[in-house]
Amino acid sequence: MRSAEEIRWWSNQKATKPADCWTRAEVDLNNQWRMLWEQHGAWTHMAIVSIVAGSPDETATVNRLLRNPGDMAAALAPYYGEAAANRFKQLLTEHLVLAADLVKASKAGEAAKAADIEARWYKNGDEIAAFMSSINPFWNEKEFRKMFHEHLDLVKEEAVTQLNQQYEQSVVTYDRMEQQILGMADHFSQGIIRQFPAKFGR
Image (tube, rainbow, N blue to C red; front, side, top):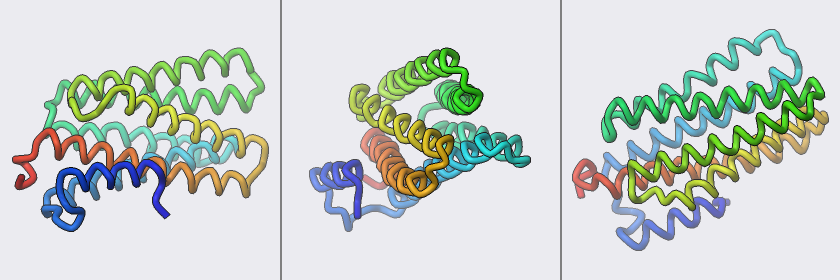
């Protein structure tokens, strides 16, 4: 069953071309961004589990998660240049570091510190939305901010369920996060396709 984000994306597709008329380049780009965001979600989940459990694989898992911003930046660079790609990498790395710090502070029972980190985490999400809308007119800032906040809400919910040992609910939350994050991936690829149609045989 498709998420609301995916349904909206497919509806937008129908306004411009039939869904069965994708070019090979469009399919490849969409698959690339789906893989990148799927990895982002999966390694975020694994990092949360490792941090909460105090697992010996915590450092290795977090380090793998922190590779994701560079992988996404490399996918942006051909369209927006190295400077813009590096700025995105910086912002997304900050997003991940703050997320890890938030889980650690919450685990330690440091409520004031956790609240401060959470505020900075959401502010960083707003900065990502503003930056993305500045490089692509098809990435509406308000829509992007709403979508990214939904992602943050679900990541926070994942952390809470792990901290409270609500493991069945954690699985349910991860499934919801996965669907939402794939909608974000489609939003990324569709924005690039609309901005650079000639690169995709349009």
